[in-house]
Length: 173
Image (cartoon, rainbow, N blue to C red; front, side, top):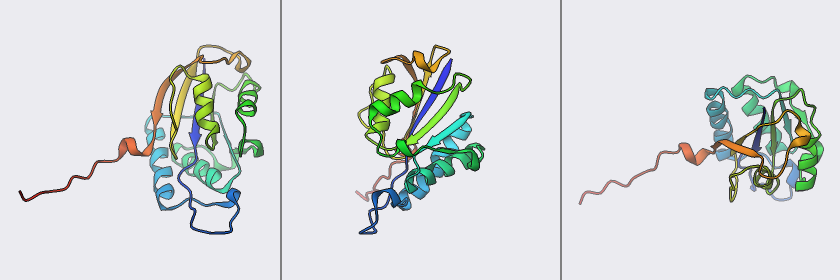
């Protein structure tokens, strides 16, 4: 059995004009959401053998934050340059070529790639994985090269708004 955690980076800042997309940092929401999702994953005892992350600032910051929360060594995060701005075909090839001794991995990247990756492999369609969203897929095979269209079962889908308590207005009426 294999498990794939597909993560989207936390919300990034558009505040700084003239900064390259690759260098955009997290905004205040992202700085709050990344550790919160990390805590959710820690509570679920998520323990990937390897975390692969886009090296873009917002992605690697999210990866390091989640890694800290789940007890994964930050220095062991593998930055994969091609995950940044990756086309779906690259992501499929990347996962299918993983060593078979890895049974539980996490990929942290960007949309539209992460949502498309879920929708190609999962039996459950998701319109859009939001920032700091994480999908857990389980596959009933032993070799990553056996990964096929809609071969994964959606085990869990975590995202920040799932844990926000709605604010209600109090009326005096």
